[in-house]
Length: 264
Image (tube, rainbow, N blue to C red; front, side):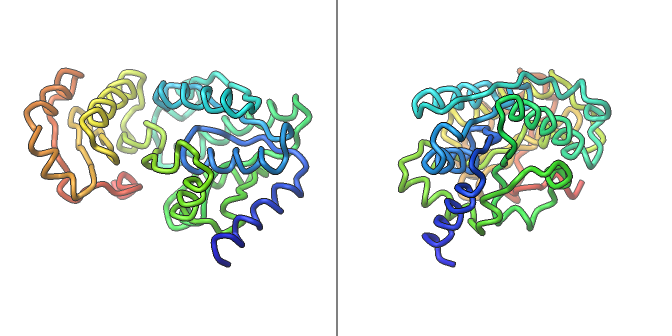
């Protein structure tokens, strides 16, 4: 199917649901899914957003602003994932543990609004990556309309641009816990350090960036075309990250890679 056929398939799929609660993080995928659901279902499409330390505060604020602007009902769930049994130990199936708990809460919140269907924003590209959280999605019966419709990230960006969504050119994002090596304890302090470090690098003009944590070492990944630019502010960047509490700061010459912590 071409991109327009996939979009129509998505709309038909959503229409068949009658109502849906979209797990909404203000990322590229969930924003496109939510807005498409609203276009098809009107007020029978609602957003459910989790507010927690795993996501930067600016992302939550952005989600609230988007829903207010578009007139979409938003249900906010306050969460502390570090209280979920087994999560802070950061095992390889950390994402499964977290999503099982969070999506259970999302389903319950949707049910209280009389909405049976819950959807999340995985797309067709995600099947090629290691995503243990998808097991929780399937176990709980959470829907993945973008994946079902065969839409890729590039296609979602293109359609988002057509729809003039503010997220069309937004860099890909994953929860802050994915920056910490498996087996290393996840703490509020580390999550805050990562958020501040990445905010600093974004403020310097780096579009796609990750600060990976290995003990007291921060390993910065950015697009290969930006590596020389980042090296040019090495003293400033290194000094700032050290001020946050990192003892060592390194630049990964391999560049930004999704799921790079999976091989560790």
